[in-house]
Image (cartoon, rainbow, N blue to C red):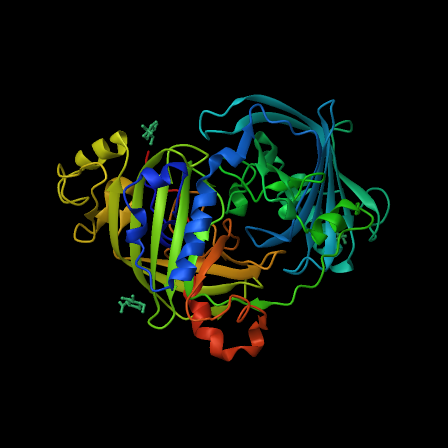
Length: 496
Ligand SMILES: *[C@@H]1O[C@H](CO)[C@@H](O)[C@H](O)[C@H]1NC(C)=O
Ligand SMILES: *[C@@H]1O[C@H](CO)[C@@H](O)[C@H](O)[C@H]1NC(C)=O
Ligand SMILES: *[C@@H]1O[C@H](CO)[C@@H](O)[C@H](O)[C@H]1NC(C)=O
């Protein structure tokens, strides 16, 4: 109820859905200083994003087979990991989670080998497009690759699951230890905060692409991980993590996929070294997919960063459905951001602060319209004066209570930039707190990321290749741009 619209995350969020073209001239809400050429590219991307027909969701999902990570994943904490999950026809599964000591997933520290049974149930009432599932765990084993990781976990075990460490063989790297055994009625997984609740929310998508990216890509979305470690064990997912991809049908090229596919608990994948690229933040970024936030929000985002004066603008398209076809409202937001500094806590990330000072809302759905018109006087634009497709400024009313937007607003943000395997620039903004609050204090700054936005227009660079491959540490001239990246998230705003 008391959810807050996440500005950066949220604000930076929305872009388009299938009905995009039927929405009155959304593009003129994104003031653009990018050249026409760049603009074409953005339109192209938006167009393809909306083309929901190329994405099919399977209901009920078919999850049989092997599913793998396509890169180094970051979970709240942060934890760096890769995953390889296999689901068998008899409902049994074997899930491998490889954990690392570094943000490039090059230094394996330990792995979990998780075996159990999963049963798909009914369509989720809460998260449209998802299927609920039950699971039971038969065995969870841990295997260490470094003395340091082993001592750390052994100490945790010794405190919370007394007797576990001392019983049986002495601990040594390279051996598998059973943390959980259903047969022996033993469960020490709580000691490391382990849970497999991600298996309780499932969605599978088939995506048809141009042949060079892999004509068919199959994705498996599993439930999200609570951003607060202490809540993890109790939390039932309402959103998703980064999807796994089918070992048979994944994006091309994908060197990481092959590495993960060939690994096992005795040979953890060591991801290839990626030169850290400094991507120019100035310019325009758009969602690469219809995004789902916990607390059930579907949206697309388009963000523009102006490096020269440290201002940003975001256009967020909200939808009622998981393919982003039924628009509910758009939100335009703008403000300033600070220069970025390297994160000490989340290696590989950059921290900055976003300020949201202006916002406008355009209702596109009758229930949203009713909600806005019924809002208390002075709490959300001109109450009673809202009309479908007519935009109102909500800056003067200090935001919009009904939508969880308060202005002015500050967000402590985390982001990183990357290039994908086909050389496109990506920006990841921080994941919003799962409890629906806003990262409005430094201690609430995210430690993991949302789905990336794709760069669709450069600001100044004559060619998109330039400025991408310069190592961060070598590019003082580009620093001001870095700071621009910040606020791109989505939030779980509060339509409810
Ligand atoms: C576990 O705890 C006991 C008693 O506190 C201690 O003697 C032992 O050294 C600990 N073992 C490990 C592996 O930390
Ligand atoms: C910042 O720069 C952009 C691009 O040059 C411009 O469109 C925008 O109006 C400027 N904003 C402010 C507040 O000066
Ligand atoms: C309007 O939005 C609500 C939820 O936000 C949804 O249930 C309803 O189907 C939407 N109506 C249309 C016509 O899209």
